[in-house]
Image (cartoon, rainbow, N blue to C red; front, side, top):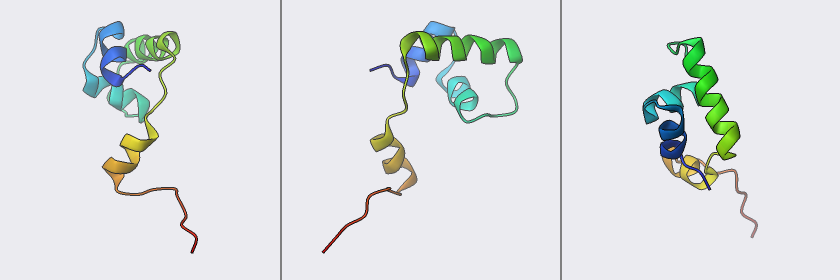
Length: 65
């Protein structure tokens, strides 16, 4: 499973730049965005939903009693 760090290394950019591209940030040059998205496709990157829910402190789980 590829990480943001793997995508950054493949695209030759920082992890912050990869994060900005994936969150549709405005301050990324179009050619850099293309490189990052190509690396995402090549490495079959998928966001880690567990890490995302820990970071946002929200979960999509519903408990039943």
